[in-house]
Amino acid sequence: MRINVEGTLGAGVSAKDIILYIIAQISASGATGYFVEYAGSAIRNLSMEARMTICNMSIEMGARGGLIAPDDITFDYLKGREFAPKGDEWASKLQEWQQLFTEPNAKFDHELHLRAEDIQPMVTYGTNPGMGIPITGNIPSEFTFDEKERLSFRKALDYMGLEQGAAIQGQKIDYVFIGSCTNSRIEDLRQVAAFVTGKQKAKDVEVWIVPGSKQVEEQARAEGLHTIFEQAGFQLRQPGCSACLGMNEDKIPAGKYCVSTSNRNFEGRQGQGARTLLASPLTAAAAAVTGVITDIRTFINSN
Image 1 (cartoon, helix red, strand yellow):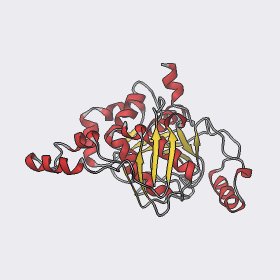
Image 2 (cartoon, rainbow, N blue to C red; image 1 turned 90 degrees about the vertical axis):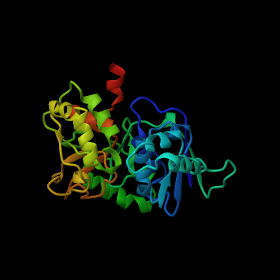
Image 3 (cartoon, rainbow, N blue to C red; image 1 turned 135 degrees about the horizontal axis):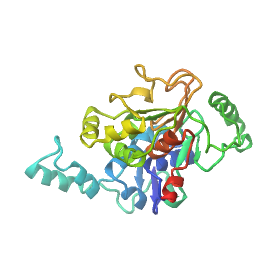
């Protein structure tokens, strides 16, 4: 399968929004059995870390895996890294990698074409990653589903404590988790720190920042990001899986709402009875400072 995203992303829209939009379009099982190539100008313009976010969530729509053709962004990211080839070996490998692209006349079993301009900041409302809507949207009404889908839809809304037809924006939240292998790379933490500089978290919201690795944590501290987080009232916790899947003591209490940058929102994923709303790091940060699901673009447009 090839999924083409052409055009320019709007302000406040990120790689996480792209992949949540795609999964919402084709469902959490829409790529079952396929290996997905992501292509198009919007994909090519993404940073390497943003591309990793998209490929990371391919499994969330049932795919066997996801790939993006390597290019200069890929090569620049790799060059000089600890385990990358050096010297003549680098030149040889680079020549090899530059051949790893899809031929113009390649035929795919299935191909999807999307416009970047149609993608808004996304947030999930249910209990699988395909149950996502634009942040300005409303939770779907039952009549939009076939009979087979109705039972799981009702069950998901009962678990989440949400009502069909209701707006997602303004939904009260209790926790924010910015972490996981999906969205806690250094680029994500820099983006969140830039947004929260000079701001404070909402009084009744607990915010956890969990770097994706020890290396990311050390880099964040070296850049002073931990100070920005602390001043905003965010907790910088130890790297690892943490509240992505309720590991160790990092669990969301039953009935509480958590905006999470992780990849899964299944029942009990972040703790027994926890209610997870998947979103991008920027959308999560906006919720952290307002205490409700908030369109990050309201901050961007006011500046």
